[in-house]
Length: 213
Figure 1 (cartoon, rainbow, N blue to C red):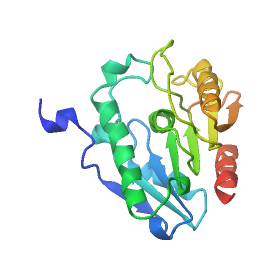
Figure 2: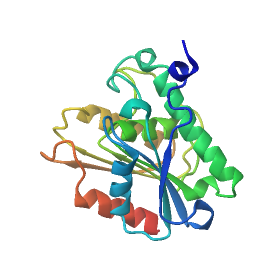
Figure 3: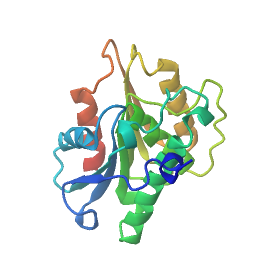
């Protein structure tokens, strides 16, 4: 296997919206969905209309963070899933090295990017500025052990999803909320009847309210 095959997201291109992270009140790592782009998720982040929030978005290799559904056995999504998680971890380490505390860093994602954001936060539980999963849930098939360690220490977590999302089972959203609460997060779970696989204005307003605090 080539190095690119083993670590497909290494060297990902990052896009930036807003102030420099060192000068921002909060820095959001923004993770796009399958088949989308860094510019797509930055447009969503821009809808928050928060001039003191920096938004950084990486572009996934091949426009996908991992090849199969997030409900597939974990090994079937490797090595891409591990590569994506390392990319996020490296970005946070880089921000911390530049003087941006973890408490000023948040994660936001839609669909596949939401799943990645939530899984990263569970595996690396710390106090973040916020974790925002739009149409997503923790990764792995039903019955996946959730033996995460650490504490989210009151991190505000927003989970928004339709009750009829064809990609995200409602039971997984509920499970995710329960697991993250067990890790000490303050979870706001909102289920929208009949919405489909998209983002609505109530979700944007809820995320804005968290970040304004």
